[in-house]
Length: 544
Image 1 (spheres, rainbow, N blue to C red):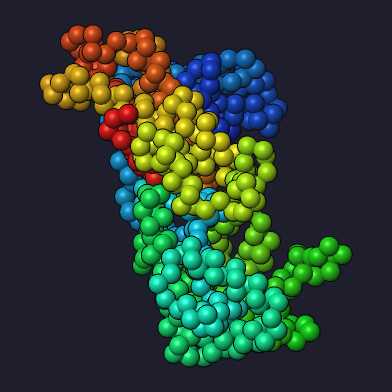
Image 2 (cartoon, rainbow, N blue to C red):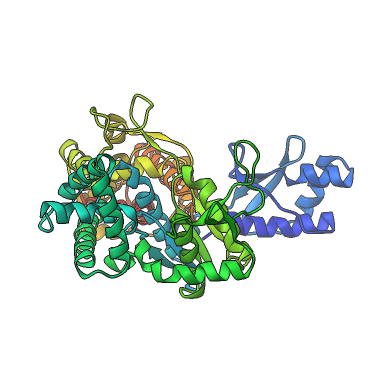
């Protein structure tokens, strides 16, 4: 049940009567009542009347019978106190997902590079993207997961040529391939003959040369297997069918070029073909180009991204595109989306959004790296989590919750001691809260079941019941605003409300209807924590 929406609908009707037009009730949780509205202040200003006078008229017009009591406070605030019987009845229920029938959303996230080990830089896109996929699906949307792999380009000609040169064509781990790639890059930068052969190898690969294609396909297969191992360890819902690499769009690039050219969107610049969407300028104020085709005839990232937009709209029938990619790519995606709108592929009815995020920092406040200055490998990070935590589930929860509890747009500090703490706003704390409730039911015995009718007598019982009804608004805000931290914050507040309830309202030592009621509140809390953490992609161990 969305209590805030129900209150808003009732209060909005009263405000409309007084204002003579629809008015937003602006309902928020309050320390002075369960909820408060300051809508009257703006309305009184527009009507040029005293706020308390207008507030009194709104109270008289409001029909909140059986739902809440309403009163005026201060200069004209409307205080709303939910009816205890209504609250008890609503708290006894459990939120169910809305029916299907939402948007078809193509969600692009994770996107590691083939022949390179996943590292901490892949972490946020993977974790945030997967949480959003789960949340949006719960909201009734049809989510199409897309893992846009970096599996094409000059670097593969360089690596394949090096593998042919050295005879190391098979049997490599992804770590081996990362090492070989660094060696190939060093040789490419220092050996002009190798550089020429590597470029010819790119042409051969793009032209379908059997040996080049065979080695490339082997690189892709080995990499995808390693990626899936990381996703399984992280508890991420991406599957092999979701992998769609840059190579998938290569045959579509000429038609993308033709379509953009036919619409007059391409300009030749020093042999290259560029688009110049309005509103983008360089440091000196000059128009900023989006490079679609290079001067040597090759295609860059922009062409592939434009092809992906067109394909996702036309072939996947998307209603909305979401790209979970770091903030440094903001200008790139803004320009790609602008050109796609100019081409007619994106419209107000079928928009694209860049769901950007900040960086992972070390405790020194700098980008998280190894002591040697290298990127931290994801496999090593997960190994360390397993070693430091009491279980794999706890270690993974610590990593994921530390990310998801932060506003995605902000950088966050990766601090093992804080993340693994069993107190505070951490994943292990929420896991512990859930395990404690389930342990209580085990001690209560099978006869406890899920309790009985909810009766609210103590303030802590009422506060917990009210907190339980905040689940649906938190999920909705997290999905609609692409901000999983709102659900994380709600779950922490719910666990804190249960802790106060547990300390002040004995459950197993109470009797009769009181015991049954408190068991019902405890069960509802556990199930809400379980549902919420599952939407964030966090596993719940049965005991801790």
